[in-house]
Every structure is written in C-alpha cells, then in structure tokens.
Image (cartoon, rainbow, N blue to C red; front, side, top):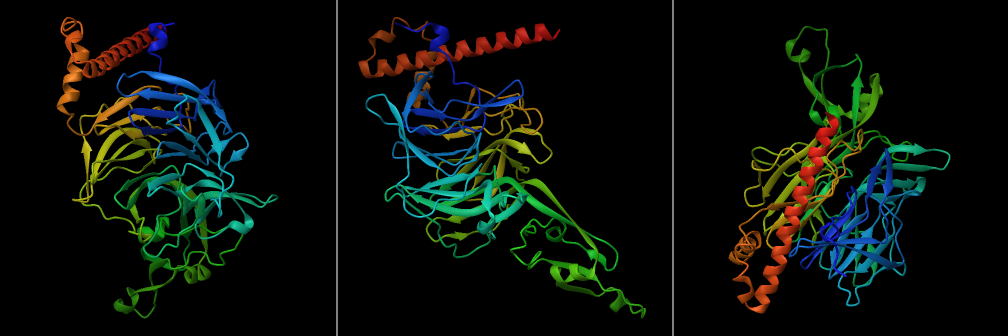
Length: 483
C-alpha cells in the first residue's frame, strides 16, 4: 500500500552525537541522542535511517544481529560498503567495542556484527574521537575517556579521578590502527614531529596520505606565580601551558612541566642597569621550586591545524597559517572536497557560541577563506557532514544551542552546501524536477533510463517543497502561541 504523503516525506528523527556515512547515492545515519524534557535519551540502536540523494526521501530500517548499545559520541566510518562503529558513551559509561554492518545487503536486512576475534590491543574506552580511513584501515585519534591507574602515560591529560576505584578521566592524543583485512589492532610508532595536544570533540579529514586534525576541546593549565621573581616577559606557552601536560594526579610522571621555560628578570641591588634588566632562562620546573605558585586546570577550545603522514607516521606540528583563520571551536566538522581542499563548518566556540560559519582551507596556498554566503541563522554543533556524489557537503542533525547549558535544540533538517558547480545533467534534472507541471506532456517521451532519473528528481523537489511548507507552518504556529 502506498504511503501517505506525510509518511512518504518523513525525515530522520532529530539528534546529536550520531554517526553518518555515505556509500553510493545513499546517506546512512545511526545512533546519537535527543533531549526530551531536559533528559538525554539515546536513540534506538536497531534503527538505521537511509537518505536517497536522488529522490530526497528518508526511510527507516530495523536492524538485526549483535546490536550495539544505544550510544552517542561513537566514531563511524565506511570501508568497502561496511559501516564501522567504534567507542561512544552509553548509560554504563565509555566503550571501546567495535561493530560493523554491511550496507550493501542484497536481502534488505541490515545485521550488526560485533568484532571479537581481533588480534592486538584496542584503544582504551572513549568517545568524541576521530577516524581517518586509509588503505582499508581505520586510524583513530584522540577522544575523551577513562583509564586505569596502570594505563596512564604521556598521551593522556587527566581531567578528573575516582581514587577509590583508581579510574582517571581525560583527553587522549594517541593513534590506533585497525586493519579491516587482517582484523588486527596496532599502535604505530610515531617517528617524528610534535603531536597535537590531547583533545576530544575535534574533527579530522584525509587528503592523499595526510590525515588532518582541526580544533577540539583541550585541558590547559594556568600557573599563577607570586612575588619572589618578577616576570619580565611571560610567553603564551608558559602562561597558558598549551604545549604542556598537566600534573597527573597519580604522580606517575615525576615531573611537573618538563621542557617548559619562562623568561624572568633577575633582580640585583648593585644598580647596574645591564644586570638589573638581564634576561635569563631556566627550566620551569626548577623555577617552581624557588617561588610560591598556584596551579589552575581549565578547559578551552582550539583552532589549530595539524596533519599526520599516514605512511611515515610523522606529525607536522602546528601548521602555521597565513592570513585569517577560523575561531577556536569543538563539535565541528571537516570534510575533504576535491584533492586539496577542506571544508570546515559549525561547532561551539570557546565562549560557548554556536557557530554557523563555513571555511575552506587550501593545501596549495596554506590559507583559510571564509564563505560569506552561508545563512547565519542556522548554527550547528555535534552534527555530521558527508561528501555527496557531486562535491556537495551534506550536514545532518546536530544542535543549534549550546549543549552544555541549553540542550534543547536538536535538528533533523539536512543542510546541503554546494562547493563546486554541478554537472550539466544535474542542472537539467533539477530544472525538470522543479517545473514538472509545465513539462508534464514532454516528460513521458524521455528514454526509460533518463525518465527514471527525472521521476526521482520530481520526487526530490516535491519532498523539499513539502518540508519547507511544513517548517514554515510550524514556525507560524510557534509565533502565534508566543504572542
């Protein structure tokens, strides 16, 4: 039986912290959560929503098999038609389980499979991490999660601790690889360069053999030094300690801030200006032994860009950018477009402002360019962004509010950003789809293959019109109730 128009033009339920991938002409969406009456409700793990890019229609499929728990903050990626889900956060805490589902099923049944017969050691439990897909491998970076006392090391910035259970929470900057061919976990040896600071809610993208990282939420330390030595110049690195790791609460490190230096004025009573103003450096750790100081741990968001060579395992260090650049943020997306460009969208700024700006980074010029034509009234954070067949970036879901203070603005609309000119065929199909009533006598004369594409495009624009009208009516009703 044919579906009623309201059902035919339905959309996936609003959500944040979900996973989305593209395979062929379809966008697949799984997981995440929605806020209902100030309660975070995880969406059912047996629901897979599929968006047909040609017809513009959403369909929901019930899944079977070894179902993951309902989660948010999982990391989703697609390789050879399989959707892999790793990590996340559920009612019981952080996860380091790995699942996959075949998206190219011939039976129409989508069946989850939990990967348990793997070799090697998986990452520790975490969420809000990122993943590069390269040479049939899933390469994971960062994330926020928990570790046991004996698992603490330099890749982990401690944020909080549960002493009785010896459990520590914090940010990671380690790299883990899962080879989908051999079902093997490994941790590559980083052979050079400075890695990004441990972080979560960052974003990543692959261009060629380079894996790029932008922004995210980090921990930094402010050291307040009291009189005893007068600071003449306090570098940004010393003042906010962006390059340093905070003290591990367990004391495992044995050092406070190794390799961190301050410039200080040596005070002298002999009246010699040269001696009085002589700058000298000594290690931050030694200086802290001779002065009274207080440590503050705070969180912030970054706007730094790094890349990892996925063949040689060398980090670039922080990439120096020429010209203007995006502001700091987390919960944003970074999407590769073309061979040498990255599209950045949305997120939450360090002063908790939901962002709606879009930027394109050119690898060739090593510069950012802000897109000025994007609507400023549609911010998104903790959304997903996937590349379509003709270079369009499809942003789905996310929140339009600050999730930390007013988590009520999850979205279900699909934002489509055109980053390059459409093909002539696409332009013609769109024109016919928008003007089907004017061309109703000519359309049946088209060749059968082309006719099928036209009929899908007619459905696409009918669905688009229906959703726009429904949204306008909802907004009108909301304004009437508010007045």
